[in-house]
Length: 285
Image (tube, rainbow, N blue to C red):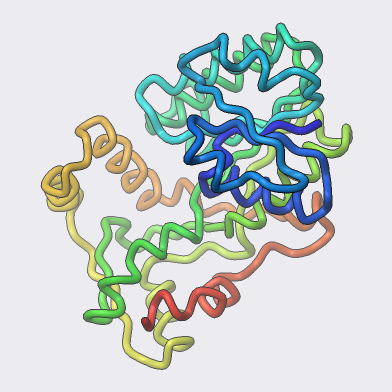
């Protein structure tokens, strides 16, 4: 039996869907009955639990042989995911497939990268079999610009001309599914990217061509972006993380392209053009 945390999130949800399509026995860890209703149904079993409540994880991990560990950004992320790792160790030999991200390193300039690195070390020190997946940037992040693209043909960011090897969440899930269902990737650390590195100006050009209308990218300073995020009501700690991301991305820290998706799954990673065409209605209304 495979356990999926973050089952109603992007990566967790996509992984759950792909496992379900294969008819694999899978259990979804959700925080309440409302979330359980979103994912329940054959062959998905649901269990209510919370990473902040270690006791609630015991029943979730009963009979589990492999688990996807992913949770939303949180300033207590190291503690929360650590609770899961400790519970997994008590449960037995659970293969933990950990979703990390941009700049994962103990000395990273990206604070969430430091959090991920601490958790990766916790898994390794636990003695559990593990696979670490590090996707630096989701193509799905582009969808947050869809309303302004529809309204004005413009989107705003703070990446300068930094290039990013962005990846479709479905490709991350495909690698996770392979790692969860075979032993061949235990002990591996994979950086997951799409097939090319693109700047936001490149993204605007692809959008313009596929949507057959002018789409432009407007770059603003980090100071301006920070003020906009704070004004939107985003918590200050989360704004700090977003500024870390923009700083690292603009410096090209996510520009390296890997072939891991194709090596692991046997098919190439999806292109941005494929992604835009799949979501064209979001950009055009």
